[in-house]
Figure (cartoon, rainbow, N blue to C red):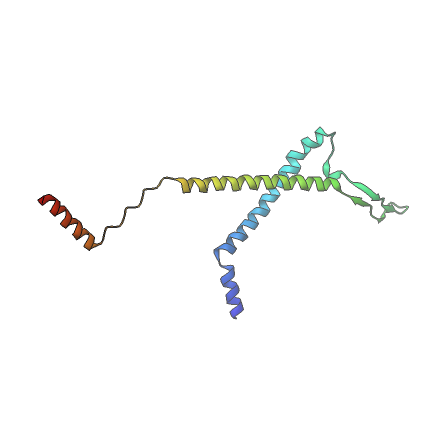
Length: 143
């Protein structure tokens, strides 16, 4: 029972919950960026390089084997380097987007720290110091 209580305490800490939320949002953000790259960015690039769809680029190491009826007995063995290029573009764009978000958050935090603040008022002097100050002021007046 003690282990369950320890796990519950661990799981309910703010950091663990924040991390879980970050992972979920990061996964969704990754899907959005992947779609943006594959559906918006890569088609124009493919058009510029001659109408190539990067995910279709591959090197066939061994052709597929089919029987007389056309059924595939052994599938082809391929190196799908086009898919690798696509995933690399996805990674670069996601990394750049995260870099921009972190940079923006750091700028906002820096502005909070640099914001002018009212200097704190000094604490009042102790009673004996106040009494000595009053005596000094009275002696100055008598002279």
